Length: 451
Image (cartoon, rainbow, N blue to C red; front, side, top):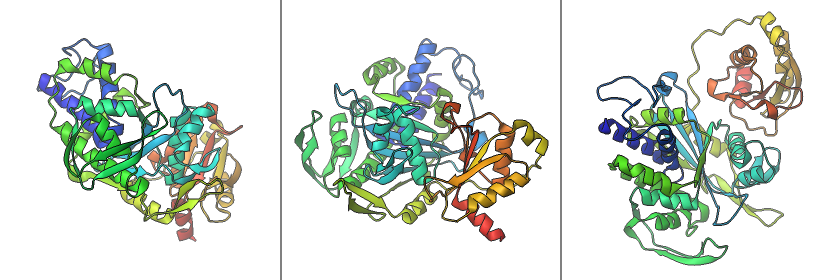
């Protein structure tokens, strides 16, 4: 049984460190912390026994099987600039979008520059690292992480299902907890303006060559903007991810050390990912080969440095180039060959879901024409309008109600994939609206091809 548990431990670490390494490792700790709270060591009950094929969690609960569901899971990894005795709100110093695709047994991750100029829903244009700050400051539903998730989703057209957040202290403790990592530093780093954690600066020196880094040094290596500003920094973070993955794969963690690890990490991390999902992801990730791990950076080839009227230096994206990278890393699922279910107007009428259509493309009149076509089929489209942005790659459905027949019928009519259907908190619904549909470029192209 110890063999199986150690494999699970490695799986949890691998889940997190592949998916962003330095900024997601805490998922392992939060997972085990939950298990420890429910089960007495040494895990003699409710775990997978040697030779058993059952998939059960502590207490005998059957685990979800994402491999069977073939559903992509997208996780936003957030590193916040929280300092000691700083009550917040905080900006995000690092943002990495990670996608785990059970269907293709692959992982993709995209580093997002913190100065990327985007539209923050409800707050207008700003740097993307302000989304988390504004969400906490203005009590946005779900706080800073929720607004950061929504901002990334709107900017990239990729739905964000979960977040993982860690501060600098948690990062250092995580690297120290796994015994440090080994990095081949390609170019020496001399940074005279590295943040000292007390709103001042300090000088750091990291020589070139192979270095074994503890948590403090690894954080300096990850955060320093020495070189070509944020883009060099993101490249180093990707290097840390791979180094951390190699270290985790070599770990042999004694069960007796787990409570100490949990105590050391403390409350430096936060996530909205359910325990069952973490376990299911760990099961998938342990079988993903290194060649199926893809990573990319929104770098200087895709952005232009601009100074705003407020004297902020920001990165304005060439969204055609960014979308090309996003499509390569997070390809849409293959359309289902299942037949489209026939509409039953009586069922639509019984649910009477109030629908608003928003045109998220540059195709004029798309929402108006679609509204009329849907009304002819029995859908209760009460309004159509333009979306906040016009560069949505994929059509999405936001449901603030449990009127599932209408949602499924809309998805079938508009060819919306399951990962682009979002079940939202009813408290956040627009006034007198049950379902919001944002029409994307995929739908506009389909309509154009049929004309």
